[in-house]
Amino acid sequence: MGQVNTSIVPEFVLLGLAQSFGMQTFFCFFFSLFYVGIIFGNLFIVFTVTFDSQLHFPMYILLANLSLIDLGLSSTTVPRMISDLFTGCKVISFHSCMVQMFFIHVMGGVEMVLLIAMAYDRYTAICKPLHYLMIMNPRKCMILVIAAWVIGMIHAVSQFIFVINLPFCGPYNVGSFYCDFPRVIKLACMDTYKLEFVVTANSGFISMCTFFFLIVSYIFILVTVRQHSSTDLSKAFFTLSAHITVVVLFFTPCMFLYVWPFPTKSLDNFFAIVDFVVTPVLNPAIYTLRNKDMKLAIRRLSRKVLNSMEIT
Image 1 (cartoon, rainbow, N blue to C red):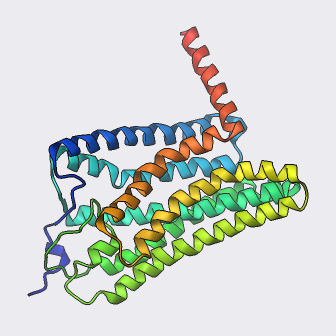
Image 2 (cartoon, rainbow, N blue to C red):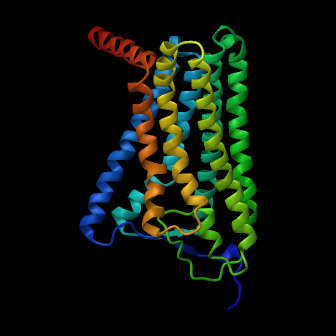
Image 3 (cartoon, one colour):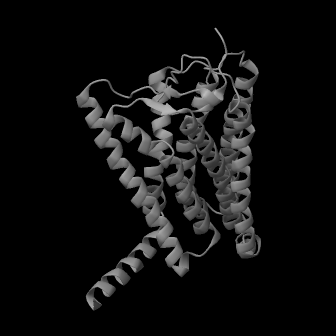
């Protein structure tokens, strides 16, 4: 079987989530509803943090950036998935596949660093409250956001440069509803063991190590607080529970998708949907419903909107 250069690969075939027309219609409606929730929920947090001066603190600046990344990560796959369900089309061009893979890992890498930055912010606020404004100043917050984007780009490029020039000679069935490095690499006409190891080390082990680092850091914060006061412990646990929930929701699918060597297609799709659909729509609810400052900011903005409507 002769090798074909990637530059003339016409398209890849995606795996449909449903075969029957009824299930396709149901999934199309289901994901469309969730995507609307993702857009409005995350943009609402960005809007609230931007226009409420009382939220111009590092924690909420990082939260606004996390919401933008959640929206971006979801937008890499969900619109395409909805379109494929609506039209019944299950193919994606080579260039679209490459772009999708690249931005999935850019957004994923940025979110990973933002979650670490948010954990550092909570550690400083809870364990060093007197020095919080000095440590987490606007300049440092901006540096953390820029560092997140730089690391996200490095994370994506370090895998992309190996995949973009792989020889493909068919079949071109990706075996999933979206393109990602582990699936596309398996379609190459060469021994890809070393490349699969690079992807596993880059995405899988980093995700796993970051997850355990974050969980340990939250436990360390709770243990530190417990040494001072049981009342402070309950308050700290309530504050951190939202962060822990988001970390578990984001990293658990990543670890299964990139580390577990024998995933089934159904389980693979389930974890991908959790990462691209469920987590981005839940994060705004988790951070707004469990945060007193966000709820107060929402009330203030609601009053301003109502007052402006009465004036007009």
